[in-house]
Length: 287
Length: 287
Image 1: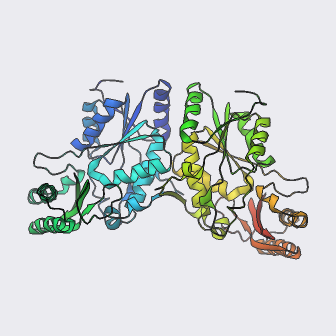
Image 2 (image 1 turned 60 degrees about the horizontal axis):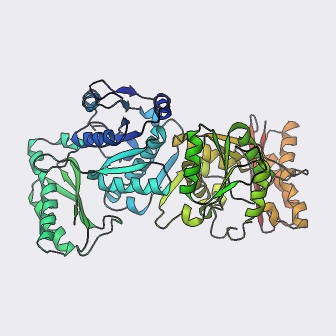
Image 3 (image 1 turned 135 degrees about the vertical axis):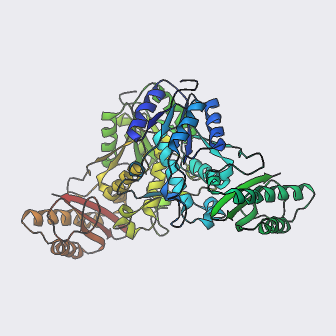
């Protein structure tokens, strides 16, 4: 495939996608999938680069999946920036973009859902009922549509990656799941399409997510082991920022997502915080 | 592949299966899957023949899937006849049999389920809560493990075929679903692995399923259009057989499975009847 510069081919139907990919598969190309909701940033592009390093053909899907949004969430205002996304992907050398319409993904009569159990229940699952059902269902659809050898996800959505790993293993989906490190702004804020919602004041306050994760890591480094004490310190830091409302702050086992009482082994610090009207998540693995 | 006579290769792990199938796929062979729970009869073998007519490699899975049985159902006593099954498949020229253990299909931590909505709710879904969740989940697993070009199901399990079609379409599973006609004993009884449970007396009484379906078709042929009247006549016939207990008798739309009031177009007559301790189902499309 081209080494970059050319515009990616844009297909919007599963039939069109299969035509291109069947021919690629027949030529023995290794196929990588980067599923996105568009509004691409460096986090997404790092996934694209990871795919291009391992695969001969990288497919980026751009689809704002309605079934993973709750009724009072930001589906309507979620940023749609297709022209800019295509330009960014062209610069990365992406060959193929799949951008289906809702009618292609959820035609009339659609009635099948993928439900992951324990991994989908706490944290985001508790705050956003049905979210991971929508994520698991659309990702499985995309995997079946593209049939990639590998699919790439960001660690910023840690629980999402865990849910997808669980689903892929349980349903014997023949794909390698890769989870790539969170990409951050120079000051530490995790890249997110939703950062666009923040005004200048909110952007500064949004740093409390990263600061509280760093605080947790620092406390552990200094010998603190009591999870409750660490969480209290994180919450106090966040609450001190005006206009920041905590959805959850948790120290959990990285596999089971169950809360830990003491930080004795690798632990995930995870949090969701609303900065004004914008809900942001972040996480850090603390060794 | 061989034209018949040789014993099929028996694999019990997904890894072993993929090894054989990757090589078949690399040679460009069209792959057919016939998912079964073993205790094979002519109904299954008709699916095998349909697959062999269309595909160069036919995989028969033999797996008594525990998750589609309710807690008070016949999982424990369900007939297991592997040696006879392999002999029957060898005679049909089947090359590959996949017979996994429970630990291979549902290892510790398994926690993902496929849920089909409306198609899975009435009839069998109402009598056997969770049944179609188990069916959809295991069939999706088998489809992902084998990755066949086509998969073959019997019309005897009409609702199951409908649920699987729905799932395959909704989740964009790249497989052609074929539904083959019900195979019957000379007297009309639909072939079923569960017919083995019947003693000689019950075997005679079991004919009421076929008789009541034939009655319904006859009444429609004679001009009867009132669904309630037809169902009443079917129920009366079944109730007249000693030791036959009705789970349901229904005239429904063949696509939506919703009850019809009048038989004005193609209609599905479906029923489940317990003959002694044995629960049997059957159905007929009435034009």
